[in-house]
Image (cartoon, rainbow, N blue to C red; front, side, top):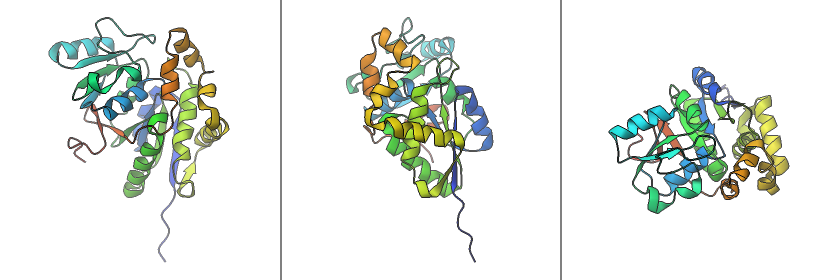
Length: 253
């Protein structure tokens, strides 16, 4: 008698630094920084950007850009565009006329840290509300094919738990085949949280500490944009130091 394939385990981590833990487990990793890093990455690739290179520090970003002046320098510190940068961290800035065909050098407070810390994992995907269904479908297909578990890593905000990332993890989990997965308590809590607020997502997300800060800085439109469910059929993949769109000829896998 052939034993049925075991269900895929789905876990969620709450902070960027836990990317390394997920990588050591050998899990497929989905990185989330819903406001705004991952939403900007998804939007940039949807609008034709060639690739995004995530880096942890401003110093590293300036150094790489000095060697590659053709790259767009993008990101934030304290929610605002750093000195000399071409783009901030607003997904609304990543329109086709700005990013099509470009390589973007990106550094943010939390999201790019989570991404770069996951570099030893075979599979690292980028998720957001904007591409929740597509990233869930790709993650499940890979995990089923390669017998991998899934870890959804929430980047958090300045090293602290982030409500919007927690809800976004639940949105992605809700789009996985429920009869083929087993959820950790943290993953189940994320799913229940999303189910509770999915009919008025913006209202719930706007209550988070990070959202309130962004609203004070004038970025309410970013929050509204980033709360759109399944806007793009795009899955970013982090491979060999750069983020490219699933299906790119450069994916090499």
